[in-house]
Length: 114
Image (cartoon, rainbow, N blue to C red; front, side, top):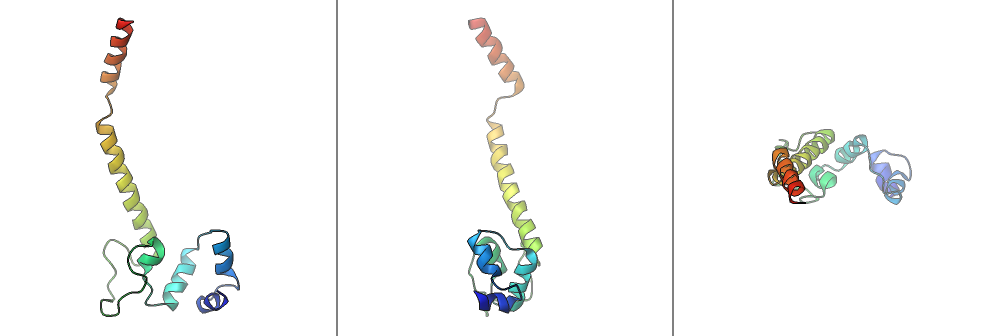
């Protein structure tokens, strides 16, 4: 790992310490990694999705749509997609949730029945 730390210009033992403590790395370090390892997929490194190495024949200078050009944009867009998905799931659950009027009527019905 020492050679990797040197290659991206971080302190000796940085990646080892981060790995041992399960800590994340900052966007500045991710950008150093991408600057040094041009064939490494930013999407793979940040999200674990897709292939680790960018296919040289498919490589373009254009950013992937919807992902962003910088690490911060990729992370921000990933968070947005997760929140949107969670909102959709929550909205579906709310569709089946009774309204206040329905709850009130059910309570009144139960009170009259007892």
